[in-house]
Length: 247
Image (tube, rainbow, N blue to C red; front, side, top):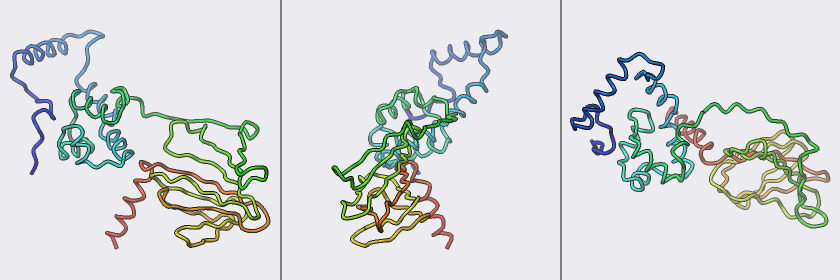
Protein backbone atom coordinates (compact mmCIF):
# COMPACT_ATOMS: atom_id res chain seq x y z
CA UNK A 1 0.00 0.00 0.00
CA UNK A 2 1.45 3.37 -1.01
CA UNK A 3 1.79 6.01 1.64
CA UNK A 4 1.37 9.72 0.93
CA UNK A 5 4.59 11.71 0.92
CA UNK A 6 5.28 14.02 3.84
CA UNK A 7 4.89 17.13 1.71
CA UNK A 8 1.50 16.05 0.36
CA UNK A 9 -0.47 16.42 3.56
CA UNK A 10 -0.62 19.27 6.04
CA UNK A 11 0.21 17.80 9.49
CA UNK A 12 -2.65 18.07 11.94
CA UNK A 13 -0.34 18.96 14.86
CA UNK A 14 3.10 20.17 13.81
CA UNK A 15 5.51 20.65 16.73
CA UNK A 16 7.68 23.47 15.37
CA UNK A 17 7.86 26.70 17.44
CA UNK A 18 6.26 28.60 14.59
CA UNK A 19 3.33 26.22 14.39
CA UNK A 20 2.94 26.35 18.18
CA UNK A 21 2.78 30.14 18.13
CA UNK A 22 0.25 30.01 15.31
CA UNK A 23 -1.95 27.59 17.23
CA UNK A 24 -1.93 29.89 20.26
CA UNK A 25 -2.89 32.86 18.10
CA UNK A 26 -5.66 30.86 16.44
CA UNK A 27 -7.01 29.80 19.83
CA UNK A 28 -7.07 33.41 20.99
CA UNK A 29 -8.72 34.52 17.75
CA UNK A 30 -11.48 31.98 18.17
CA UNK A 31 -12.00 32.79 21.84
CA UNK A 32 -12.38 36.53 21.24
CA UNK A 33 -15.85 37.53 20.13
CA UNK A 34 -15.56 40.09 17.36
CA UNK A 35 -17.10 40.64 13.91
CA UNK A 36 -13.76 39.58 12.40
CA UNK A 37 -13.56 36.17 14.08
CA UNK A 38 -13.55 33.18 11.71
CA UNK A 39 -15.25 30.04 12.95
CA UNK A 40 -13.36 26.82 12.13
CA UNK A 41 -16.44 25.34 10.49
CA UNK A 42 -16.51 28.33 8.13
CA UNK A 43 -13.18 27.31 6.63
CA UNK A 44 -14.41 23.72 6.26
CA UNK A 45 -17.53 24.92 4.47
CA UNK A 46 -15.43 27.04 2.11
CA UNK A 47 -13.29 24.04 1.15
CA UNK A 48 -16.33 21.80 0.80
CA UNK A 49 -18.12 24.22 -1.53
CA UNK A 50 -14.97 24.70 -3.61
CA UNK A 51 -15.18 21.06 -4.78
CA UNK A 52 -11.40 21.00 -5.24
CA UNK A 53 -11.23 17.29 -6.03
CA UNK A 54 -13.95 17.52 -8.66
CA UNK A 55 -12.29 20.51 -10.33
CA UNK A 56 -8.91 18.76 -10.41
CA UNK A 57 -10.43 15.62 -11.91
CA UNK A 58 -12.24 17.65 -14.58
CA UNK A 59 -9.01 19.37 -15.57
CA UNK A 60 -7.16 16.05 -15.69
CA UNK A 61 -9.80 14.36 -17.85
CA UNK A 62 -9.95 17.36 -20.17
CA UNK A 63 -6.23 16.82 -20.83
CA UNK A 64 -6.81 13.06 -21.25
CA UNK A 65 -4.25 12.57 -18.48
CA UNK A 66 -4.01 9.62 -16.09
CA UNK A 67 -3.22 9.84 -12.40
CA UNK A 68 0.27 8.44 -12.93
CA UNK A 69 1.12 11.04 -15.56
CA UNK A 70 -0.29 13.86 -13.43
CA UNK A 71 1.74 12.56 -10.50
CA UNK A 72 4.90 12.56 -12.60
CA UNK A 73 4.30 16.16 -13.67
CA UNK A 74 3.48 17.46 -10.21
CA UNK A 75 5.77 15.29 -8.09
CA UNK A 76 2.75 13.97 -6.16
CA UNK A 77 1.91 10.29 -5.78
CA UNK A 78 -0.96 8.80 -7.79
CA UNK A 79 -2.53 7.45 -4.58
CA UNK A 80 -2.56 10.92 -3.03
CA UNK A 81 -4.07 12.43 -6.19
CA UNK A 82 -6.78 9.75 -6.16
CA UNK A 83 -7.63 10.60 -2.54
CA UNK A 84 -7.61 14.28 -3.45
CA UNK A 85 -10.05 13.83 -6.34
CA UNK A 86 -12.45 11.86 -4.15
CA UNK A 87 -12.36 14.49 -1.40
CA UNK A 88 -10.68 12.32 1.23
CA UNK A 89 -7.77 14.74 1.66
CA UNK A 90 -7.29 18.50 1.20
CA UNK A 91 -4.21 19.78 -0.67
CA UNK A 92 -1.75 22.23 0.81
CA UNK A 93 -1.36 25.57 -0.95
CA UNK A 94 2.01 24.39 -2.30
CA UNK A 95 0.48 21.28 -3.89
CA UNK A 96 -2.46 23.24 -5.26
CA UNK A 97 0.05 25.60 -6.88
CA UNK A 98 1.80 22.62 -8.49
CA UNK A 99 -1.50 21.48 -10.00
CA UNK A 100 -2.32 25.00 -11.16
CA UNK A 101 1.02 25.23 -13.00
CA UNK A 102 0.50 21.89 -14.75
CA UNK A 103 -3.00 22.85 -15.90
CA UNK A 104 -1.93 26.44 -16.69
CA UNK A 105 -4.57 27.90 -14.37
CA UNK A 106 -4.53 30.59 -11.69
CA UNK A 107 -5.08 29.50 -8.11
CA UNK A 108 -8.35 31.45 -8.17
CA UNK A 109 -9.71 28.90 -10.68
CA UNK A 110 -10.10 26.33 -7.90
CA UNK A 111 -12.25 28.66 -5.80
CA UNK A 112 -14.48 30.27 -8.44
CA UNK A 113 -18.19 30.01 -7.79
CA UNK A 114 -19.84 26.92 -9.24
CA UNK A 115 -23.21 28.66 -9.56
CA UNK A 116 -23.38 29.28 -13.30
CA UNK A 117 -27.01 29.96 -13.92
CA UNK A 118 -27.43 30.90 -17.53
CA UNK A 119 -30.19 32.62 -19.47
CA UNK A 120 -29.27 33.78 -22.96
CA UNK A 121 -31.25 34.41 -26.14
CA UNK A 122 -29.80 34.72 -29.62
CA UNK A 123 -32.25 36.05 -32.20
CA UNK A 124 -32.36 34.51 -35.64
CA UNK A 125 -31.63 37.87 -37.25
CA UNK A 126 -28.42 38.18 -35.21
CA UNK A 127 -27.04 34.78 -36.23
CA UNK A 128 -24.62 34.53 -39.17
CA UNK A 129 -25.10 31.89 -41.88
CA UNK A 130 -21.74 30.92 -43.34
CA UNK A 131 -21.72 29.30 -46.82
CA UNK A 132 -18.87 26.87 -47.57
CA UNK A 133 -17.70 25.70 -50.97
CA UNK A 134 -17.66 28.59 -53.42
CA UNK A 135 -20.38 30.29 -55.48
CA UNK A 136 -22.76 27.36 -55.04
CA UNK A 137 -22.12 26.26 -51.45
CA UNK A 138 -21.80 22.62 -50.44
CA UNK A 139 -23.30 23.38 -47.04
CA UNK A 140 -24.26 26.34 -44.85
CA UNK A 141 -23.36 26.47 -41.16
CA UNK A 142 -24.85 28.42 -38.25
CA UNK A 143 -23.00 28.35 -34.93
CA UNK A 144 -24.72 28.77 -31.54
CA UNK A 145 -21.41 28.77 -29.67
CA UNK A 146 -21.80 32.42 -28.64
CA UNK A 147 -24.53 31.26 -26.25
CA UNK A 148 -22.04 29.04 -24.41
CA UNK A 149 -18.75 30.96 -24.33
CA UNK A 150 -17.40 28.89 -21.40
CA UNK A 151 -16.94 25.89 -23.67
CA UNK A 152 -17.67 22.24 -22.92
CA UNK A 153 -20.10 21.85 -25.82
CA UNK A 154 -20.39 23.49 -29.21
CA UNK A 155 -23.79 23.45 -30.95
CA UNK A 156 -24.32 24.39 -34.59
CA UNK A 157 -26.62 23.69 -37.53
CA UNK A 158 -25.24 22.37 -40.82
CA UNK A 159 -27.52 22.70 -43.85
CA UNK A 160 -26.31 20.19 -46.43
CA UNK A 161 -27.09 21.14 -50.03
CA UNK A 162 -28.39 18.60 -52.60
CA UNK A 163 -26.59 17.62 -55.79
CA UNK A 164 -22.99 16.72 -56.55
CA UNK A 165 -21.40 18.67 -53.72
CA UNK A 166 -18.44 17.97 -51.49
CA UNK A 167 -19.40 16.25 -48.25
CA UNK A 168 -19.22 18.03 -44.91
CA UNK A 169 -16.18 16.69 -43.04
CA UNK A 170 -16.04 17.81 -39.37
CA UNK A 171 -12.68 18.23 -37.70
CA UNK A 172 -11.55 15.45 -35.39
CA UNK A 173 -11.30 16.21 -31.68
CA UNK A 174 -11.19 14.27 -28.36
CA UNK A 175 -14.85 14.06 -27.46
CA UNK A 176 -18.28 12.97 -28.67
CA UNK A 177 -20.57 14.30 -31.39
CA UNK A 178 -24.36 14.16 -31.32
CA UNK A 179 -26.28 14.69 -34.55
CA UNK A 180 -30.04 15.26 -34.76
CA UNK A 181 -31.64 15.40 -38.22
CA UNK A 182 -33.97 18.40 -38.19
CA UNK A 183 -35.23 17.93 -41.76
CA UNK A 184 -34.43 16.07 -44.95
CA UNK A 185 -32.19 13.04 -45.36
CA UNK A 186 -28.43 12.75 -45.00
CA UNK A 187 -25.74 10.14 -45.39
CA UNK A 188 -23.02 9.53 -42.84
CA UNK A 189 -19.91 7.75 -44.11
CA UNK A 190 -17.77 6.11 -41.43
CA UNK A 191 -14.83 3.85 -42.24
CA UNK A 192 -16.06 3.58 -45.83
CA UNK A 193 -19.51 2.42 -44.72
CA UNK A 194 -22.54 4.61 -45.59
CA UNK A 195 -25.43 5.09 -43.15
CA UNK A 196 -28.69 6.83 -44.12
CA UNK A 197 -30.16 9.30 -41.63
CA UNK A 198 -33.69 10.66 -41.97
CA UNK A 199 -35.70 13.34 -40.15
CA UNK A 200 -35.61 12.98 -36.34
CA UNK A 201 -32.89 10.31 -36.38
CA UNK A 202 -30.19 10.77 -33.71
CA UNK A 203 -26.54 9.78 -34.01
CA UNK A 204 -23.75 9.61 -31.44
CA UNK A 205 -20.21 9.22 -32.74
CA UNK A 206 -16.69 9.70 -31.41
CA UNK A 207 -15.14 13.02 -32.39
CA UNK A 208 -11.92 11.15 -33.17
CA UNK A 209 -13.59 9.07 -35.90
CA UNK A 210 -13.03 10.18 -39.53
CA UNK A 211 -16.52 10.88 -40.90
CA UNK A 212 -18.38 12.83 -43.56
CA UNK A 213 -21.97 13.95 -44.05
CA UNK A 214 -23.72 14.63 -47.35
CA UNK A 215 -27.26 15.37 -48.46
CA UNK A 216 -29.54 12.62 -49.80
CA UNK A 217 -32.45 13.62 -52.01
CA UNK A 218 -33.43 16.80 -53.82
CA UNK A 219 -33.98 19.08 -50.80
CA UNK A 220 -31.43 20.33 -48.26
CA UNK A 221 -30.80 18.27 -45.13
CA UNK A 222 -30.56 20.23 -41.90
CA UNK A 223 -28.50 18.73 -39.06
CA UNK A 224 -28.19 19.93 -35.47
CA UNK A 225 -24.65 19.00 -34.43
CA UNK A 226 -23.55 19.24 -30.79
CA UNK A 227 -19.88 18.57 -30.02
CA UNK A 228 -18.95 17.59 -26.45
CA UNK A 229 -15.35 17.78 -25.29
CA UNK A 230 -13.62 14.82 -23.63
CA UNK A 231 -14.55 16.06 -20.15
CA UNK A 232 -18.25 16.04 -20.98
CA UNK A 233 -17.91 12.72 -22.78
CA UNK A 234 -16.52 10.89 -19.75
CA UNK A 235 -19.86 9.97 -18.04
CA UNK A 236 -21.21 7.93 -21.00
CA UNK A 237 -18.05 5.77 -20.97
CA UNK A 238 -18.47 5.14 -17.24
CA UNK A 239 -22.13 4.19 -17.67
CA UNK A 240 -21.26 1.85 -20.52
CA UNK A 241 -18.70 0.00 -18.40
CA UNK A 242 -21.13 -0.35 -15.50
CA UNK A 243 -23.77 -1.78 -17.83
CA UNK A 244 -21.32 -4.33 -19.21
CA UNK A 245 -20.22 -5.35 -15.74
CA UNK A 246 -23.84 -5.71 -14.64
CA UNK A 247 -24.51 -8.02 -17.59
